[in-house]
Amino acid sequence: MPRRKKLPDRVLLAAAAAAALFVSPGVSAQGKLPPYPEALRCAALTSAAANLGKSSPQASQLFDHQIYWSMAAADSGRAAGKAARAVETEVRSGATAAEARLRSQDGATTAALADCVRRVPALND
Image (cartoon, rainbow, N blue to C red; front, side):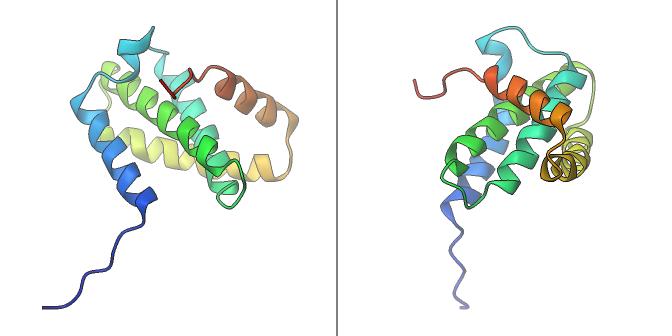
């Protein structure tokens, strides 16, 4: 039997978080559910930031922000009648565009990211 490759811990963590999106109320249980466009924007921005900061000392914190807003976008999308796959596609598309703006140090994009990060609750309970 061929030997299987071991998946990195980050991949397993992301898979577990994605699974949790579909079996728990997630963000809505913690407070008011943000409107879908807002959650989508923050999910895209934090995803772009996490991608750009993969090898930085803040990579773990960026990943936490990404997970939080991804869950918020999934919950808000579900409440708005969006399919999970459509939400994922919109986040990915938005992240690609946001990544280019963050690389160019666009002030409005950086400020929007800071606002999204500021609204992530403490995740180390």
